[in-house]
Amino acid sequence: MRLLKQVEIQPGCLNTDGNRIDSLCGLSLSEIYRKVCNGYPKFFKMDGLCKTGFVAAEILLEGLTPEQKAEGSVILFGRAGSLATDRNYENTIRDPENYYPSPALFVYTLANIVTGEIAIRHKMQGESSMYVLPEYDSEAETRTVQAAFDESDTPLIVSGWVDYENDDNYQAILNLYIKD
Image 1 (spheres, rainbow, N blue to C red):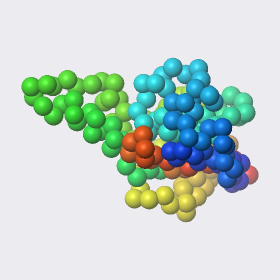
Image 2 (image 1 turned 30 degrees about the horizontal axis):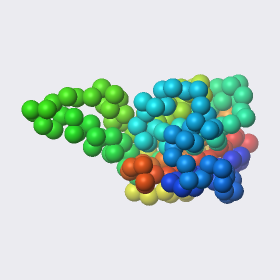
Image 3 (image 1 turned 90 degrees about the vertical axis):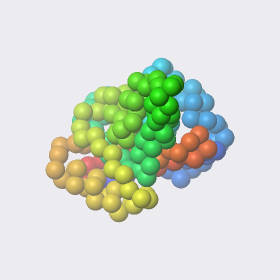
Image 4 (image 1 turned 180 degrees about the horizontal axis):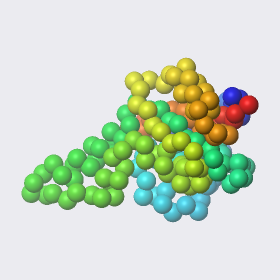
């Protein structure tokens, strides 16, 4: 397998292949979305984890054709999973006097929704999975990606770390791998 590209996003900074993109640093995820990948209105309904992964994937996959992406896979790792959204959803059901379960929040109470959002947007039909780990582990990522290449016909894999606690604490480190 070969690494083609890497995108890293965290509050205040965006890097592509280790190079800081000054025009996008200091912007919120929504502002980056508007500058780079406008045209997918569902973005504004997504939770923070999905927005983080989605924006990073948009930049990572920029320039690839639909045919190149069609059989691609998405394999992500993160620490908190959907915990930020779980907490927001819990607030809608906690008080019996003010009980209003929110379907808009409930749909994002699974960590793997971010992989699905990326796969749907880019029409990627390969494997899609999200693993929760205590910290970013590049060796676990490498082993998992290599196993996916070995056990399938997928030509490319979007993989990496996506974690979101709140608008001031999030990170995506996404890598684009191709099969050699």
